[in-house]
Image (cartoon, rainbow, N blue to C red; front, side, top):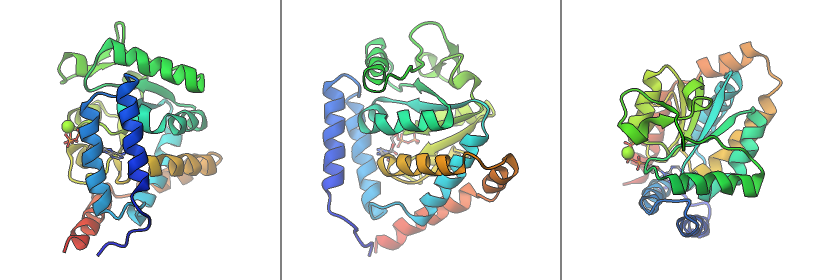
Length: 245
Ligand code: ATP
Ligand code: MG
């Protein structure tokens, strides 16, 4: 069976953060359901960063450092759980942050933008006015900022939806997903999938990116080329299968 490294206090504080996010108008009530699904998979993975996730995080850091225009996409759960880590990572990578909502409302979009401004003095891109549309997605869900995801060559999508992951890939972008369910379409379609809890993965991603910042392009490219997402995903799935006996 899977050894548990620590009790469940961690997920309780995450739950608390998501509920607070709903109260603050950052997180949609559907975000509560997504959190529950995430917790279930986290439990099956042993609530730890697996060696496979660690590898994916390293490849993701290299891919994001190689990008000319990296963007971190943020939704209501991400804002509630780890805005500090998103703001820090954006600084390290010199990346834009863009609010990208599945259940789009102008109010929630504005709340998340001002939350980042207040807490981190970070300017966050949004799609309140105008904007471009990702081809193949229904109206509101396809809206992206012209200076953000639209022109990005690599997008970090913590907690993205499968349709949008596919659509971003069709646009030729490198999509890096953080997703606890290795079977979801997001996990299966992303270029690099980090099967880990966002709250554990983001600090590791930031420290890898910091440590690798000075590496030359060839070395970073070698790390990305040496990473096989399908193989890595299958290993994560095996961890779950072996644990459930
Ligand atoms: P898909 O659209 O990719 O096929 P889905 O419809 O099952 O998947 P969504 O509702 O689109 O899932 O997104 C929620 C996903 O986010 C779930 O798969 C859940 O496991 C994952 N998730 C929730 N919380 C976290 C977290 N803290 N860290 C990483 N993943 C999480
Ligand atoms: Mg979905």
